[in-house]
Image 1 (spheres, each protein chain N blue to C red):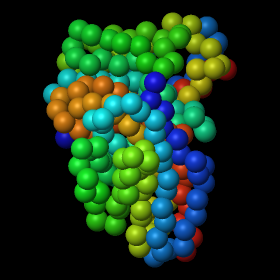
Image 2 (cartoon, chains in turn purple, blue; image 1 turned 90 degrees about the vertical axis):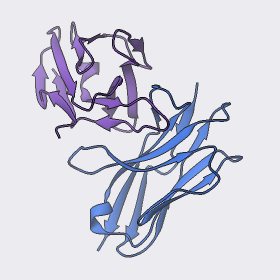
Image 3 (cartoon, rainbow over the protein chains, first blue to last red; image 1 turned 90 degrees about the horizontal axis):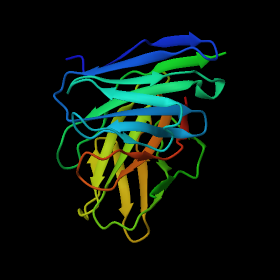
Image 4 (tube, rainbow over the protein chains, first blue to last red; image 1 turned 60 degrees about the vertical axis):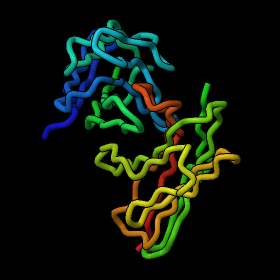
Length: 113
Length: 115
């Protein structure tokens, strides 16, 4: 059971370059999320998708776009990377229903130089 | 907006001893859900324990238990018989309802376990 799979695990970009972080879950979950983790800041929500076909902004959406490609996949795109986007990015998913926890991928460490 | 505060950036505990990590939150909701996640050096996010606000009984999972004080908006995590493998970042998180809404996380507490 793979759970939530994120690719790549590591990435180095130059300022201005673009890239897409991929995320897929095989648990038939309705909701998917993108968070970023920075030292001393905890996890902050970038975007989420409550169900297939919907996306909503989180706390720190600027500089990012998302696509809920289908129920399994939720991608995060950086159109023009900036050093402030250096971070660890986590994708997560959750089932519908009471108190369903988030299941996380293993994260992507992104460095923008 | 809801906020989650973890007032202890770092803590340490002797192996086999007990430690309590603090968490407070701010909400005007009456029904909500609370979680503790563990993040070891591997970076993996692992669910430790969860609590429904409508349940008065504190949740327990083996050596992990919570002290949920709804009126005080406090949700502390107690780790008993601490083990070296408990060393990690611990995040407290809040969700305002049972639907498909995101979790709001605190900034975390780094726990060290001393042999």
